[in-house]
Length: 559
Image 1 (tube, rainbow, N blue to C red):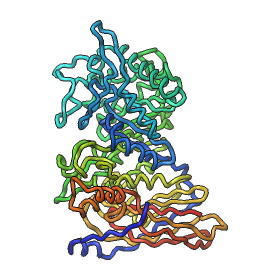
Image 2: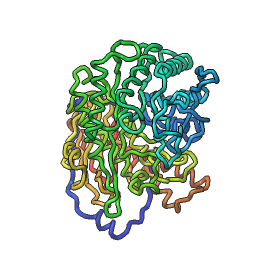
Image 3: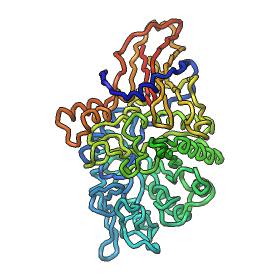
Image 4: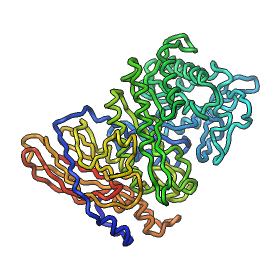
């Protein structure tokens, strides 16, 4: 992490807008008012192409994800059970774990998934094991579906890879054999701490069966996981976000099934250690600029929380938002959908910071137990630099969004009370998004000898706006502390932003070694100013700064 200066050439129009007067925003942080433990919901990531995790840039990024967090980082990936040769494509991977021999007997081969999970182990992250999709020889026949795999840009969930099993007992045996192998290879105690999730989005075309058939799949899956590891964490349904009546009904029906029915596999009560669903936003182009849809994501999460809270048995069951993103297609580049242009610059991290706070605020209002905001973003091997996929890095160059997770990793202890005169209330964001005044807000933490304040100047519309003068007042610093060390980190157009540097180079697709080194350095989390000591008066410090539109800051104090 370092400080640097980077000159930007702004058009006269942009200068005129950014120089408009902006009323000072006052942010107050009270370190004495705890709102409970800071839960690292940020430390979860996922991606379609599971094979990428063992490739050059995939391994590099996996290590960086481990390094950004003091707590375990969890990785979820699709296609662990797919038939194939292990060569990834966009929105596709395979492992060939299961096939039938000439006599119809199962053959198990865990060679490819061993390489994936070995890479996770070597880089220090923990798998979240998604049990899916259907091996070719185990897929049932569904009318109108004749091919096993469809290739992007065709809907890759349109083949028999998403069919129900033709034999549920054989599926259950596959799950049991797989978990036995994982326990033997990586240790029973270790694997017992992993999360096992059944399938992905079975309420839409990722599942070509009925709701009841998914419940049966869930039953056979969790029964066989638990048969091997009685303490393993099992859950689902990994449904789409309950933003529609259909999605809401599916989640509610699933919870009723787990609460009231007997397991179809063994007749026992149905285990459910976590509840998962996928809230998503919806960006679009408006007047030739990107307008984000954060209200869609937060409204979907709020609806999901409210459904869970209807069930006293499950109200404190951990909720894993096993995909929580600005929209729904990581593999659709901005060439395919121009509204995805938000992904390369500072708008994506600012959106993520607002979503993080919003998801936590809504969780607390509903009285449920959120533990994960999993970002469905990783990297794509062999693609153009900054092509506009929903990724954390591009050809080994970290993008600005990765730095908001680095900021979150510097926060610890208890979450404490913040107020801001520039805040848009979370319920207004749920209903209307951030379409009028920007959301200039913060959340903060306090640990034994440090505190941290993350703050942002966010607007749904990705257009230039006034720079906001912000005064941050932090009270409740322990008695006897006379000075604190301030480290001020920043993500904006000219800090922690490899994309700006790449464009200034002329957008090279074959950067020189010197350029590549510069890009990698520019992708790291960067200090806005040199660290400095601040005097503490009666347990209080006051920090003045300016916050550009779509910028995110972290004020990190040590004493």
